Length: 277
Image (tube, rainbow, N blue to C red):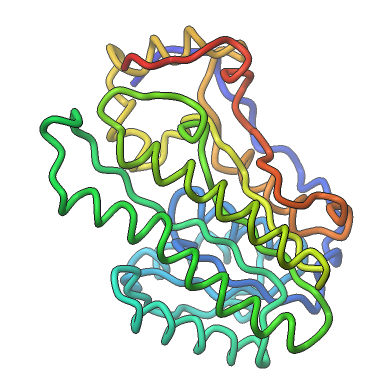
């Protein structure tokens, strides 16, 4: 694994445990990596969470983690979703909203994929796969949830997980960088159209987080160490650091945040453009 400063231990949860009591959330990819940390943090804040993922196996592994933390597993549900098809996305979104009593209060578009290849070697199939999961699925889910939020008339929160890759050129990441820039653009338009309905739409912009997907791209020292060297904080991020940013964006305190990307990047965007790997 790459070198770097030791990450701090996860601190005690910094918000009240009833801050989101009575609120319902939908989290795509909510059973592993950053998504699991988001699910945990939302439960810590009092929300109920519909965990949407392709297969149940990772959710089943998350349940003992929730139990160990003494979090209410009965305030979660698992819903299978196929992010590659319109019908699969709509079906799961409808099911999740029905579980939430007809309309979820919070949508977190977290699920994402990355295909890694130089542009000249990248396949159209991998490009389409990345765009479908990272952009098309959040578009459909946000559209479906916002319709219900507007009809209900009580507002809502939509957060999508973007990336510093939306701002940088990264070798071998053409589809990924493009998809994350696209989700920021989509979020700004959503905010422009839906803020009048008290729907706050924002993104978080993580630096590299060594989840399974992050480790695949940056886990080797020859690739990861140069990125750490460019990061003023001197390390990659932990999933809980991203999750706490999401909780802020779905909290009552974020009412003035509209169409923004909350950068959680260890300062890397202050240092220039890391186009190499």
